[in-house]
Image (cartoon, rainbow, N blue to C red; front, side):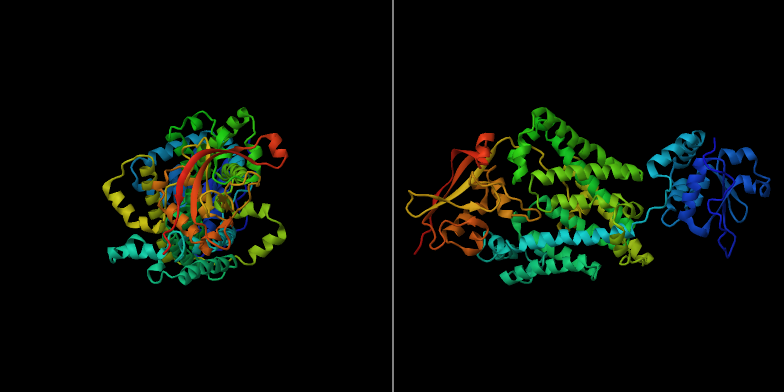
Length: 614
């Protein structure tokens, strides 16, 4: 039964044409044919004419009616004819960016016969494929546009970059300042012996100046440029400078900038820059980045062989042992084990299954977006991961298109955005460069994925990857490959006499058992995070830790400012040490009385130390 009122053109209006156009003839009684003819007409514009054979068959007596019913017919202005898959690809070759299908058909071995068989199968089951089309793309399917998506993505990403720069700016002096834990000047001096090679190994602006003023300038300049991006002021220039400045901080920050979200941010900056030139290319790169991040995060958990992930018991520990839990983590940790198993299994579905929907038709992409957003919201509610979850959620935006966004946003906001969206198209040479960079990034990311999972890429590929590695255009991802099952915390203490010891309290990591875990999103407290990693290792393999203690013995203001409390505000302590505790959540009765943690002393993490004062 036909599903449309046949004998209609996909567009009744006849556009004026300066020269003869090719004609695509389809079956007007076929709902599937009409659906895709209408879609292709919007793709090709007035470059191709579309007519049902019921209207024009008499004008083409050389084509049997059975051929019209069997497949679409493409008639060129010189009367040359093609049908079925070849006709489809000839038609698409008139749409911008779709000519590669015809090139594959004509030049890629095996592609033509496979395409024709696939076309024949679809043609034999057109009613079913019409229903599938309506389900997967919607009744009013249009060629996707991404101008509004890209405009909103760039503005929101400016807020993410702003968070990253400001977060590091308020900590920078205590971490890498001249009196900080790991002074930048020490890194610059140590690498000076490498000569010009150091500029390639660590591309950063701090080779010009490594002073405290320079550190402040880079952080706050990055924040200012991020605000410019938010307000759409010189967005491309802003993104280029944001990338250069954050890459500089990435190297200058040393161990305090060694987190995956820092490389994640760097890659997203590059993707955003390409999106500002060619929205469609940027959207596809964003989807590829989101796919890699989600899929690799799930796969590393299984490849690690950790029995807690394989047995779906990881969440029995995660809410307690994650670096910086939120107040809601206490409640999540009390979920029944059966429910935790279900949640862990659902997490694997989101990380290993839904990413493949990213490359599927639009409604399946919407399913992927919803699932990823739900997972990120759950993580955000129970754990403090700075801007990381917010950035991942933002990467779901390009899974939509402008048509979907218009259905979601309030009309007033939509009008405000549309008034600022530029329809200016990039010139062809710019598109060529952008697409070449996109291909390079995909190539490099495939190498990174292969290496991450134990593969052996060709030597030439590894060499090429090595050329670009210092720029961090792409990076491997994968969090929490192995689940920690106990929470060990380092408590630093100071004393004037070696007998009475007083605790230093950190701003965000657990310490005082009566203190509620704080919220710090989108801030990234880098010292607190490194203290979590230090607790997993021997202090002899944590070189920054002794430097940190030395700064406490000096009562260095820039370092003590990173802490919640300094028990020696007027005079530095004579001794400092680090105790090792096992932390667990307080029971329900203790929690009702205001206690959040129980702790048990395990021993000494770092022995009492003092300065040799002259």
